[in-house]
Image (tube, rainbow, N blue to C red; front, side):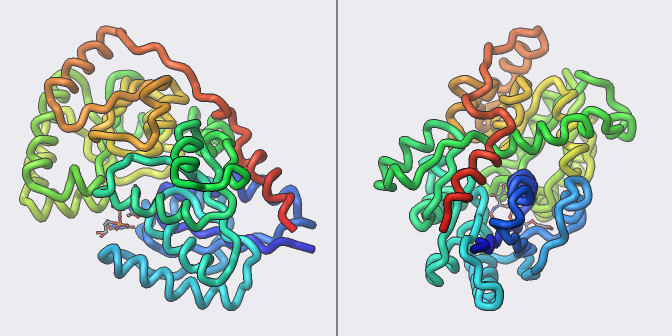
Length: 366
Ligand code: UD1
């Protein structure tokens, strides 16, 4: 009997996590029928459509059109619309990825309808419940039937939360599958020519976490950090719409635009963005996924957070937690520019075969 699999995606980091999984399941048409559901949590062309074009993802079978809102509004709208779709489609398995509001909403609706749930990128914990994503992670994992884990800390976290070992699978990092599948296209991207920057003569900056961008005082700290870095090396900053909105609301947009050496650009698609990372000197970010991609590419990553749910990137990767501490950042910048980099190792199973491991497990579903 065929298994009907519904994938729930909604926000930018979901798209590259679902891509290798759909490709892998395509190899077993007698076993799986795939249905793609886009909640539209992210809806701008450069936050959503460009990823479908670049990765050649299939057109979603359903768009829920939920858009932005408060956490309760967004999560509730997804749930109400998703329930209707599930009633129509009747999936046997729902696959959710990562830790965004669409992930939790998808898992909650599936659980209440007695549909089995697979969570890809399970077990990560920052132990910081002020992060909306941490709530999404804990709740999604407590509902999931198949928990696919990227790094060994996830195994420990899930066991500590009482998840049965038989439901937990260490499969590695599916984002690395996507990176390897697209590496040739990434290397060939012309994005640096478009913005006229030379290889290794710049760093990449991204910032969007509420803890960094939702208050005036933290944005002013960020401003001073960027000004100091720009005196030493160019900065390329594809700006997230949330951050742009906050800079404008706090009257800081003009000040940021005036920093000499800071190149402010629109959010980029996957291929162009990864090319910028591939060729840069280091990355300064508060993203989750970029901590992993830089570890794989052995590019130094300064993470502007106080904690990370991805501790392996600190222990064996290229990542440093720097918060908004200007002197720590400038110190590390000095080391990086002098070529003093920390030794790093690519974590176990980050080898481009995670999707195959996941599908091997899911092929066993009756
Ligand atoms: C969401 C995820 C976060 C992830 C990030 C990646 C949650 C709780 N957060 O944060 O984990 O790291 O995506 O980007 O799910 N906006 C637009 N156009 C869009 C999307 C958003 O203009 O296409 C603006 C809106 O003003 C919106 C704001 O960005 O209110 C925030 O969007 P939202 O989806 O709530 O969260 P993100 O900050 O993007």
